[in-house]
Image: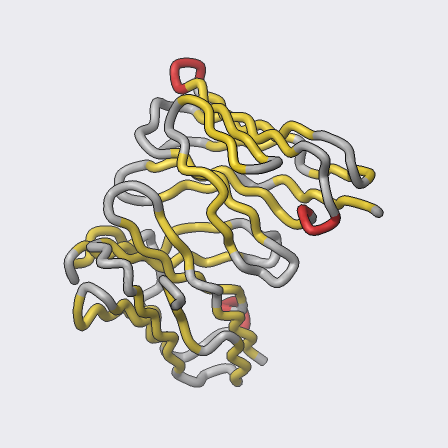
Length: 107
Length: 110
C-alpha cells in the first residue's frame, strides 16, 4: 500500500511566525487531504487538494502530484493553530494517514 | 447541523463488556468508515461500507462488528472488550472524494 511520511514530527513556533509542513507519498494518488486535529480531538478538514494550490485565510496548500509531495503553509501563526496536522491520501477506497506533525504555537 | 455525528463521545467500560458506538451522516454520502486512533495519534482504517455493503475490513478482530442499516448510518459493536481496545474511534463519510469525520468516541476499557 501507499506510504505517507510527514515532516517535521514536532514543531514549536512563536506566535506570528510562519511554517511549512511537508507530506511525501510513495505512489500516485487521486485524493489528498490535510486535517487539523485540535486539542479537543476534533479532525477538521483543511484542504482537499489532489493537485495544485489552494488558499484559505492564513493557510495554503500545494500538491505536486508528479513529484509525490504536498506542502501546508501556515502564516502568522496563532495559538489556536496548535494541534496535530495530518496528511492523508486515498489508497483503494480508504484514506491512509501520515503520522502527523505536532504543532505548538507559543504566545 | 452536525454533518457526521457519533455517540457517545466518551465511553468507559469494564473488560469483557459489550458496547456499541453509533454514527450518522446527513451529507447524502454513499460511503462510510470507521477509523481507530491509537495512543500515539496514529489513524488507521478499520472498516469501509459503500451503499450498506462492506468493502474494506482491515484485519480487525471479529469481536468488532460493523452494521449499516442504511446509507446514513454505520454503527460499531464491540464484544468482549479488552484493555487494548482503548482508543479514539472516528466515523467518517465521503462521496468518492473529500472525507468528513465525526468528533470521535474516546473508549476507555478498565
